[in-house]
Length: 412
Image (cartoon, rainbow, N blue to C red):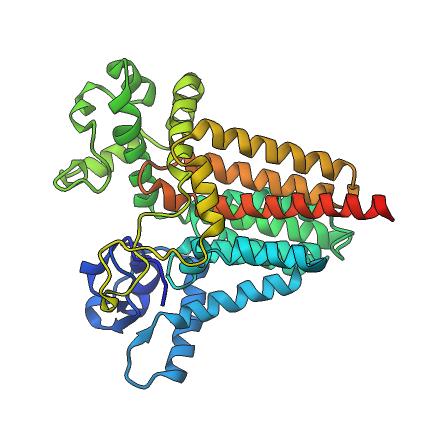
């Protein structure tokens, strides 16, 4: 059984169900069995569409297990069934497209995440479903998939904006007209706003703190000037090098979190990067270089298999291994490849207007996710790029499909 180890985030989803596993396995191993216990019962005030999938998996688990434990393959079954539904919805033409789909989305990078409770997995599942419903011209179902994607995790909420634009622009092709088009687009935008309004405060605060003190300031050439631009003073110099989860760090000081939240937000970060474009490019390139390895540094196996800590499966990893070989440690090359892929997709779509709006929306989704993943947090960069990799690979498949259409039409 191949899964993806818990980095500590599973409790955001499973805590409301009182479901958990031995914390000593975090990061290192991916347990096969979880336990229902009062000690695991807590509410971290996170709300995600992944919790809906977890509830379905718990119901399924109760049907097949009588010992009270939870088998992680139940959530894998729920995730996997939805992914297979998306593959059924997405039209394929011939063996090359089918093999390409298996090669890319059957990679262990994606499959291992199905046996997990990461909110990013819900985002991935509903992204694929959104693509399928778009290609099938199912506007209402596309709206539902977009709302569930937006609700998966607040950092992915902004993806609702390009999807709302696609619903508004392509309403007729998606079987919507008149007020239905406007309703679908407005509903998705409302979902975006709701996701941001209800975001737990510590989510935003932890990310911003880590970016500032763990990424930006340690490389600063003008510490006082950068602090001032960020809206802070020299008293914060003592926190340089810390991140949000530093043991006995800033957030362990009484009143620090409340004071920090009053002074800083993502707007401060945005203003800093706009005033320091060179530094923005440096941090962006560094994140891409790290993300180039594709797979996060998390174990794939249960402890019972006797493998070393952090062991990862090498079965069916051809696609992620190829991309890792090309891009690991080189953010400049990775970004150049992304730009070339974008140019190729748009050029092909301009010659096939039926899919132009969809390609533009997909490109917008990819770049929104890219910026958020690269500059929105400084910890676990590889894992935060998971949905970006899915969007990038969808664009790869789209580009190949459009090229095949052009060749086929030319020969006909």
